[in-house]
Image (cartoon, rainbow, N blue to C red; front, side, top):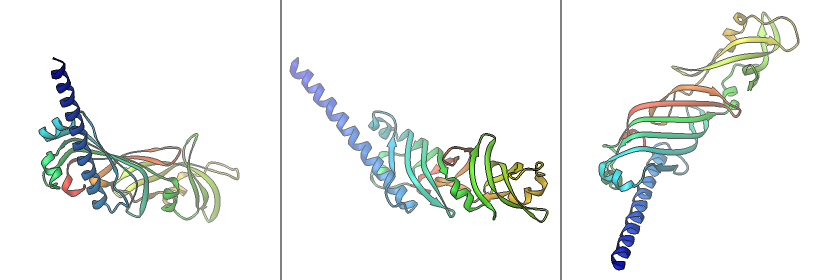
Amino acid sequence: MRAVLILIVVLAVALVVGDRVAVVVAQNEIGRRVAAAYDLPRAPGVSIGGFPFLTQALDGHYPEIDIRVGDWTGEDITVHDLDVRLTDVAAPLSDLLDRRTENLIAATATATAVVPYDSVRGFAPEGVESVAPGPDGLRVTGTFPVQGLSIPAIVVVTVAPAEDGIEVTPVSAQSTVGGPTIPLSLLRSVLTFTVPLRQLPLGARLTDIQPGADGLHVTATAHDVPFADAP
């Protein structure tokens, strides 16, 4: 009986080791393909969720795959902390091992990243000195032309996904040298601008933007994503 128990333990350990080896091979291959597809300086970290991996591989279905890219540059803008979560991925292990991607499809890809405020300011009109969160919302400070005068002001703006990227729109303004509230009609044409970030990798298009302490936290999604078009 003792010999049988030892054999069972040995087999269980072998299965676990084999499972972990297989998942590392698959993760490394996905990371290599992501790096090649997007000219990344190094392969991103990849984590295939669920255990055991081999049962998912035999089934050819992975509920969740996380890709940690880090910094990514596209459309003349660099974002930080880019993470992509793939869900309901159809990817047979044989295709991954043979480096074939034509049959690999993710039902949903959700990308999150941080657009630093310095990058936002880089696309702002002349006169903008800073973009930063404030107690009343996202603030744009600078000196702006108002009826022929250059007025120092703090302008509260909103950010929203648009066809061309992140649309920045003023909603209130106040002169920093005193005086009445500046009419929005005098600033709207001057301070409405777009940060050109239409999508993140895998064709994910912007769906949500939230100001944070370190920048704009953006979320983008895509559906029925062919792996052959990305990693």
